[in-house]
Picture 1 (cartoon, rainbow, N blue to C red):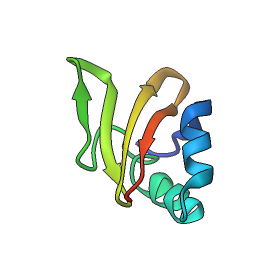
Picture 2 (tube, rainbow, N blue to C red):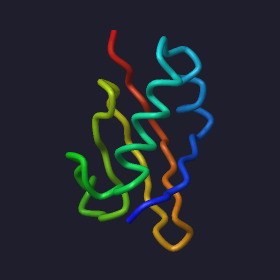
Picture 3 (cartoon, rainbow, N blue to C red):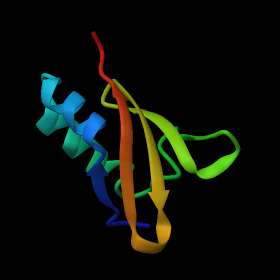
Length: 81
């Protein structure tokens, strides 16, 4: 799989703007989960295949996969201290 569009919910976007490395993080997202949202060490949350969490570029994220529209929506981010 390749070419998933990555979107950020308002809370995640606000966190990303405060994070010191947003450009690097966006590139890391595109090169990992953007190609395979079910891989790269991600795991399902609450038994739902499309509700997932992973660590990308040192940032813990929770996201949803909408495979039918080829989109990932990041809903929570916890950057490193």
